[in-house]
Length: 250
Image (cartoon, rainbow, N blue to C red):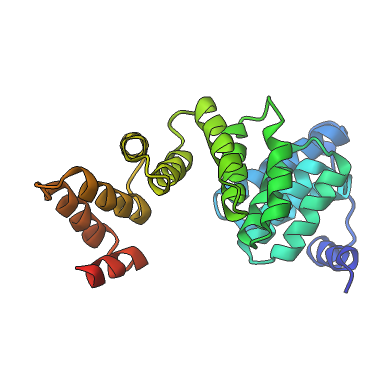
């Protein structure tokens, strides 16, 4: 069934044949649109999906091409597992406004999760070019991660370093460059990035495994640090694949 028909039926089932009432907004459709979108965003952040949907559908009654309304509705659909419908709404938002970075960032994230790394890279690159977008550092992280998956190590390092230039404490970028440095046998640099990661955010199974690996290199006669990382991995993430592998390697 075509998406437009599905969406229309959803709209009718929730709102019947009622018309949009903007009386509470002084009869101003633009103000009503902004208010409905904000209400939808607020309800979604609180986990009240039905209320979020009601307000977002009201917004789309006013302007079905609204980039903001389509973007938030797509986020709602994602929470319900309707990923393909969400992608269609992200595309609709971008068709209305190609410069609307929030929708492009979300679209890139979904593409990356679906392992469409080439497409994700394209969209992350476009977002990263938006110098006024507040999540620009995260766009460079996404770009770097996409380049890693595509086997482009140098391009990945360039993107991740741009992320760190914009936000020196962005955890995912620190961990990725630490791992790249380790793979390239630049162990002091890898340790430097790992320590900065540990100061910036909470440990993860990957960071603890990297810590174990580096501790083996830098502590030939003293394995206290290696044991500390291993203990943290087993106690904090006992069911992780990394913890199970570490126990097998003992």
